[in-house]
Length: 336
Image (cartoon, rainbow, N blue to C red):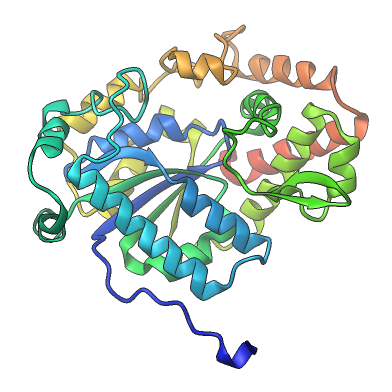
């Protein structure tokens, strides 16, 4: 079949009313913000979207055509809201962040018990629920997502100081060979690499886990600092948890929603606002991802402690890259 005979893949009809994506690099604070988003009227429980992430990663690797990628994103968004409104694939594990027991469990149990299938599209049309997705490292695919979902998409990019993310990401890198790892990998010269290693495979191959964490984080920060983040609300973690009012106002407006008591209650559960950055809830899932109680009451000292840990495990070149990344982050997002 020639290129001229290829059929354009399309998806004209769509059930989805609106979707909010809370996106960012691992460890940035997405799971602090996503439950707050879930507390808004009409917003669904947070859930993950591995298929949408995989489509975006394949698109970055130029292994999927634009029309195919856009149609798959639309179809999967429809499927997620359809199954959510029917109670299918509902997460009933009480300890999970996406559990139905986090918000109004009786509503979600009721969805499982009532009739579904052909009734759901009309229900979505009437109730106009907002799909709530927590996603990872999708900023490089922002144009693809905007073109796919258009004005249905509210994209929130949570950013955070690199020294507060590097421990979790270093732990994540040890799980790349785990079959549960759902990000796209590719092979080059017989060796497997993650999707974000493209263009720096030799450096990836010669680096240890801490150095790989630095270089992959640097790849993402270069995207973050260079992109025009149109149709994207960028929220620095450090500013939000201490002074959330301005960001909450922007989120409320973007969702065309209202700030009610349930939202304020969830903000209190997430300890927002807080006096110190590290004063968040000590959840088991955070501990599994490398969270430890702060070792100092000084935030500057806390960053210094983290830098010393990294310094003991990386080359001078990698440390210089980390220091430059930290300086760029502070200048862009934290300078007054």
